[in-house]
Image 1: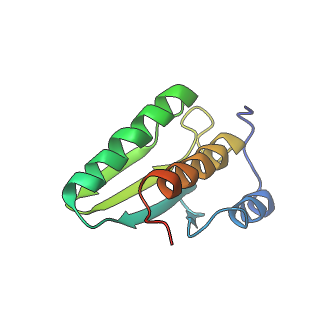
Image 2: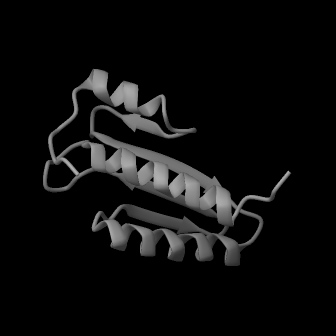
Length: 104
């Protein structure tokens, strides 16, 4: 995965492929908040995401507050947003959808 910083236009294009992720353009990170039915589910999600992030060797800032989990992504080495951030964001969304969202 590339550590090249993305331009604003590239970031906006990458955001189109993600669901409900937002970008803070002044501090250069993307983030998303999930709310779960229970504290246990929120913590289980946090643990699964930490395992995924470890496998990708790309570690987000994760905060938890009871049933809410917030994830912030940016590439520390590049001091901004790279493709690594968007690849991990997409993988996190897929993980949450498969393991933590009820099927319809």
